[in-house]
Image (cartoon, rainbow, N blue to C red; front, side, top):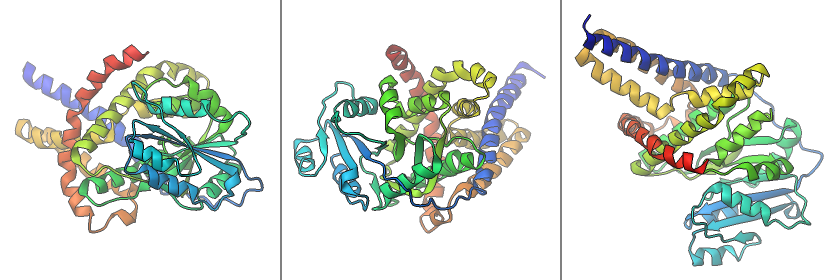
Length: 388
């Protein structure tokens, strides 16, 4: 065997092993999600006091809908307050928001992050107000009138300090938006429903998440990067706080409609995952030694290949290898068929409709484009080092 073929075989083996480990992880939790059954929470005996925080960065078109949605709750109005952090939004938007019974903050950060907005909101809450639970919503999110009541019931039944609601798409009007909706539900199945089925903390999504107020107030000050959800998640895991997930508490999120924005989003998430593992890998030994299983799982999860990039690799290898060495391609074809079956297990039936075909045909092209976004990770690494 000459050097060229040795290099080909070694690269193929390394890449296939990395992809296979990711597929194995996804398979375990995808199957587990099928066995997640929980009864509806009983009505809580105590009514908690909520503060709802809505960071909004240049979301002039959608923020007002979110405010109307959260204000239209059946939960007693005296028991919840709403704070909107309107960052770099138009004056007319702020004028309209000021007409609602909310607290409106209008910062003008030089470098805007969600963490800064949340810290500003917490620091500006009235000292005489006592809250039990804080809820984070994205601008553009919509909730049902029973949302706060359901959260109140869930906190009493769960007995934990963090609960993630079920995020799903409010729009599927383009192939990209539909594909984004599919990916969101796959995440819900694997990283939330599948995890709690096995007694492991669910992943938080950054929106539709509720925390015990005192814990949040103490820990949000420790967050100082642009990927606050991963930092908060790491803090929860290190403190051995279980994150529960309730499939019946719905938050409808606005999904991106365009390919370019979709790929930017995936590149940003891949970069975030890369930075998360750099920041937390040092905790792996102590997590194993102290049997912090949630932390171990989270670190392993961050070490896996992002799913969009994983699929792009499978597609590229399946296409290229037959022209190099046909035998090597067979296992990639099998891998592609297997992971598509696993994803099918994780996708709810309501998403398999007349819009499915358009999204399915576009998926390989989008995934290959996402592979190119790996370069974003390298470009952001320097920025991450400067922050820390």
